[in-house]
View (cartoon, one colour):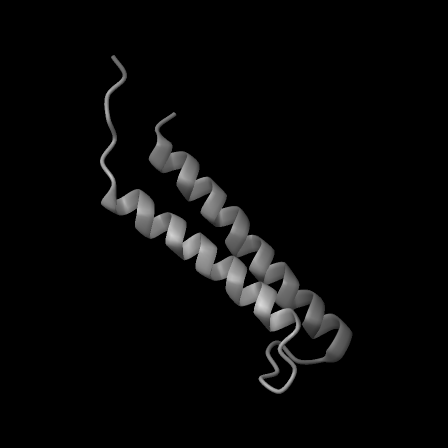
Length: 67
């Protein structure tokens, strides 16, 4: 499996984690995103940003063939 697919899978895990954080906030507090209370939002934005960074990083690097 190439490194690009691994990065995509890990990014999907982080996107899913961000979604689950916001879903838990919707269930518990009744709002997906509250700008006044940045507790859950901080972790969700950080997870989504990490996933996006992984996708960008895997897109700009080249796969090197194994010797």
